[in-house]
Image 1 (cartoon, rainbow, N blue to C red):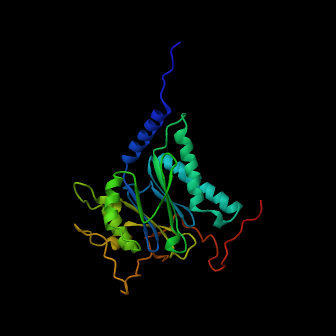
Image 2: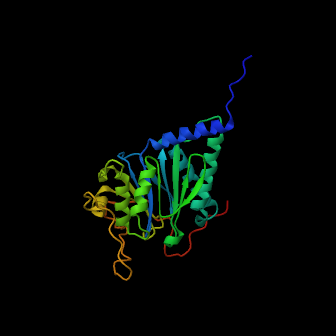
Image 3: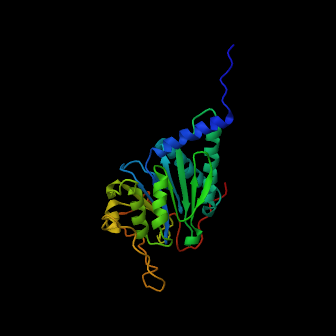
Length: 287
């Protein structure tokens, strides 16, 4: 009887981590940027059918890079968990932190299990509050680690180069136009050249607290992107932040909610989930 081949636990975990990292780095980078009125997500995604950024709940968004079939399963599970918790208890009990913890347990279990390969995914779970200080962005890795990000975060592709560009050009409290400009420029930046990404190849979505609907998630389509980005010639970065005391300091470009605006889209044409004028969200009936 032959002896089974032995691999130390340390080497096994290292091999699984290398496998997951290589799969994630083969994709395109995704950027999450906090701006004055919410959180912006930008990625290069030529596909019009497969989305990397989606809505989870009223104030919560989900973004991922890696294998589409794997992070789509995680997204669907998160939507089901949020709906079940909001119905059984209260809509206010559905939080980004709770979803991040659930994802961390799932990814950690899969990574440490020897029966299946690790997921080749990284995830952002973002939640906006009533003020910018209450916004939360959680980053989850393939092994189940959770990190609380502030300002901006990058995952997938050449994340180090994109992060270095954002570190140099990002300004806290910027408007939507400024955040979008610097995020798109960062995605097109590389060590050899700076390329201009066509708006048709960009997937852009926001969590915007200025929206009047209870659901704060919205997609920004190419027609709206052309207006926001404007001239993107060589060397153009985010517009400078006005000095203190300037009337334009607090100016921002909110996402409008005009019904006849073809660029204003939520994840589905549905009526409001609760009455904005009631002051209190509805409570589900007892089971």
